[in-house]
Image (tube, rainbow, N blue to C red; front, side, top):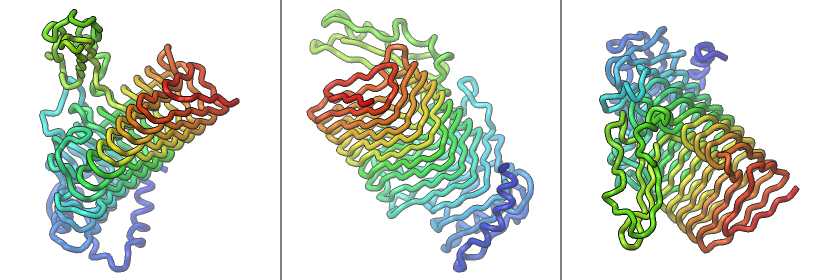
Length: 468
């Protein structure tokens, strides 16, 4: 059903469904950017109320804004659109919640100016679609629920939810110092984030950052993340707390193209990687960081040294984004169930999970299809004492530039993978289709049943069982 038709049919039903105890509903009657009856005026009025706020947009036409729409209240906000398009021709964040309020939003489209790329970047700060910031003293659970919402054309993140005290400089893994004690819960149903994050390095379709004691839970149903500049979705838990992902019927396609390898490859040194014998190469004799490109931040440089301080090897790479990227750096775990997903054509890996603390990685893939991603189709790496557990049914990896199914245990934990009716072929040209590496002291076992792995199975430190 078209966005507009669905929205118009459901606004009245949403109003009828409001609880009896709900406070006065604020009605938007004009598409003007400001003034009486505008959405901006309603948000300002609601921000001053202690009670939960409900705003319903009845106004016809697009709401074109010059500056960010802000809700600064701490009470929950419900925002019902009428097939409403909120757009900006300037590089600004469209909707910002600065008080840590819970949000329910339905039938709204947030549109940035679009047209962003390496040659037309944001002058900064890069505007976002939806920006939710938790309070430093916040506890409990911050809830963001979106239904029939679309975000497009922003220079920065399409959707950004964070409790990181440094906000814009939170970084990855345990970066960003500290955050609130609250957890973050997102429910996204029939949500699309398309062409966001194409005007600034490291900008994702959806980015969630959690520091402090809380965790992250993301529930996706019938969602689509496509053509975003960074990762399709990025969940970054830097301290205590788990990352929980439950995704059903969703798509993650052609994300990560801001750092376009075709446009940036000519700036790589030649050769881009090399190895040397001890004493053969001094550190100041190898290429330094890339400079003079359209976006130097797109390049990564890694150097390993011999015991005598000479260079053992170096490698340069272009940092392209993944379809799904999850990092957990504290004692929490990554707990993921992805079913009926299309993970296609991403410029980096299709799915990339990394856990560096005491927690586990537990990944379940059911009926997923990963094709034509530039990196590995499904990557899992546990770098701490936790376990890696993979439960795979009917998952497919075809034509990816890296490996098919990858499970790595670098710490003291166990590695256990069970797969049924898997298919892997045409990946990398060198294989393997399934790679399981137990590099620590734990046990390792891989069992595959009724699977078609045309590009081979490779196990190090694991017992591999192939059942017909």
